[in-house]
Length: 408
Ligand SMILES: Cc1cc2nc3c(=O)[nH]c(=O)nc-3n(C[C@H](O)[C@H](O)[C@H](O)COP(=O)(O)OP(=O)(O)OC[C@H]3O[C@@H](n4cnc5c(N)ncnc54)[C@H](O)[C@@H]3O)c2cc1C
Image (cartoon, rainbow, N blue to C red; front, side, top):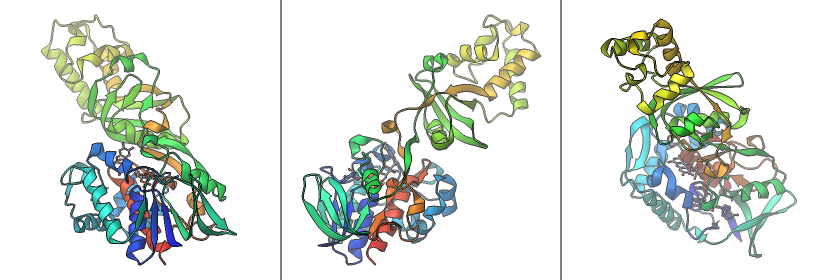
């Protein structure tokens, strides 16, 4: 008989199991893969952007759904405690652009190995290749789990940390949603978040492989204007790159497609400054075709599409260009429209938006309000954030709080 069974050996589950073990409990961690932390290994391009060194207020600003639910989790185990824990486990950390924190070695496997040591030092029993089918309850109290291969294991508490629905090959196949639903929990419909966007616009596909640095993207979602700045990549299906990945999270719940997004290709110029700059280009390039004089400002491959969007004739000469042409060009560069038709499939999303309804979980303990002894942690909960290390901190903070609460 175990005090606690943790289902799922991702960052949330490993942290929860180790924390309960540290608090003297007899803990079993069940992971269906042959290794722990399969998704954690591929985070941050295998470098693991483990957290963000900014203040907790920044975390709240970067959480798209249910940030307030995370108050207690962050108050119990914040980014500083995570970094200190990693250091105490022998992983030194470094801070990069936008306060993103990585292991100094640039190896995500160092984080996985450290967590494995943390589990061992706290006497957590680990079973790999152990997929859980169901959580057993007696009345409204947890009594154990049933494995897919048929055997059952008794325990008084369960921490469900099976992750979301993206990158299924890493093990997050939505099993936890099904188990929680069987126990009466509501699931907010899982949607892709931090995902590339699709468009049917051919000019976008023709630009496949072109990257735009530090552009601003905005989209009207309901009554809100979502805005993000960063690099954008044109692909064979539509749009990707950090700025698109981040803006997509605002669209996960509330957008109806097709939806218009606007791209400011040169946000460091005000409209007036850009107009001025375009005139300078004209002055310096008399006698040339208009389409050939903006190569310093924009990728040359984009110019025909921009001319078309601006309603300008490709054959126009610089000397024939007037105020109206420049104004149209300025408007198009500052507000290039793309009609977006939806997301790439959820499996290609970095995270899942949706999951266990936070209204049914006590935020101070992460225990289910319906089933005694059932706790939740990580991406399975309906909380999601932008890129920057916030999602892993959510997993670690909720894992810690779930573990400490289940050990009381
Ligand atoms: C490509 C990619 C890059 C990312 N990079 C970053 C980054 O740099 N920084 C960041 O903050 N976030 C990043 N994320 C997001 C981050 O990885 C997740 O938010 C985080 O892993 C969620 O942790 P979790 O423990 O809740 O779930 P998971 O990591 O998904 O772990 C869940 C575990 O549960 C196991 N499981 C599922 N069902 C069962 C079952 N029935 N029985 C037993 N075990 C089961 C799974 O096999 C899995 O190991 C990235 C995600 C992806 C896909």
